[in-house]
Length: 249
Ligand code: AMP
Image (cartoon, rainbow, N blue to C red; front, side):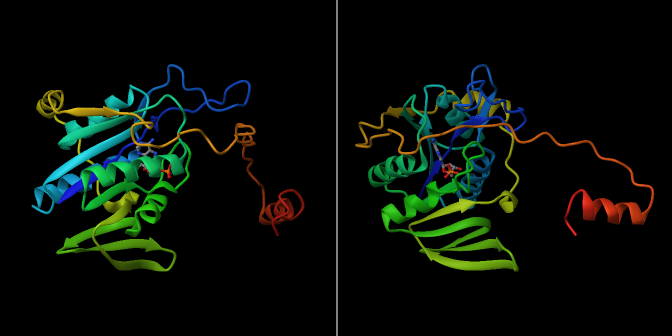
């Protein structure tokens, strides 16, 4: 089975994001970028499937600027076999990403697409679901455990009341949650080896997809500054503040 893993290049999660002065978006110039953390978990899971003899080839795909090659290389250094860059300098929305992934799925014929549950930049949580719908495939979202057996996958999902286990028929799209695994660090020899692994390059036009945005961002603003905390002298004062200042009781 071939596994396709879409990996997005996003602002590194350690970076404090700054809003642009004109409120049109967030500052991306000279900001450290990295692989979306949920996508690292997806790559890790694909590698574990390969190590268990349940997957033969892992293909990582990134849709983004030329520099998204670095994100692909990170996946290759972790253990993926080859990469595909869909190069575009536009900000691509989940529907366009899903359409491009659909075109690649039709070309590559994977038995499984393992994606992140959400990208930490747009927080959309849409791409995997849209891709499954466009392909007419089964989907298992927010997997915190995954077992492959024959032509089906068992997906355990964290839901409000506990854990839900679903069986989905393969091929399927499965999106991964935080607790599925702990991604490995790439070792130096694997980073060197990854430099020789192939990365194909294509474009949205080659895949027959128009990446033009359908949504218009009206404005992006900083979250309100948190006021400092205070110590209260007594329970009565606390109750009074909760009632009259915070107005929560
Ligand atoms: P989203 O729907 O934007 O929250 O993204 C969910 C998942 O879709 C991500 O964790 C990635 O696996 C995949 N994805 C979204 N955008 C891209 C992109 N530009 N390139 C590759 N994968 C992407």
